[in-house]
Length: 101
Image (tube, rainbow, N blue to C red; front, side, top):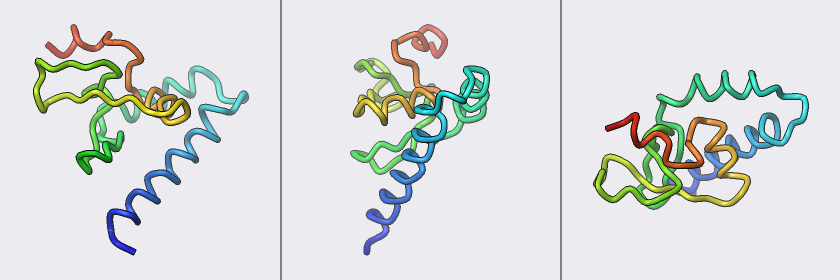
């Protein structure tokens, strides 16, 4: 098994865990979700398979932001993965655009 496949398998297992235990868990409070977001929003934890690179959630968007060049990326994902990315700090909208300029 090559390293990329091992890494991708591990990453998917982590995202599945986060989805099951935090996103799709009615016992988790909004405060707990905010704490997770606060903890990870400045850490590269969103995997971009096309570049084999982790991104900080605050540097990713769900809409194209071409004027940032390679410093930001548009990452849209399946429903469950998108919710995990939002849990980790990715904004649904382009709200962070004004904060990063």
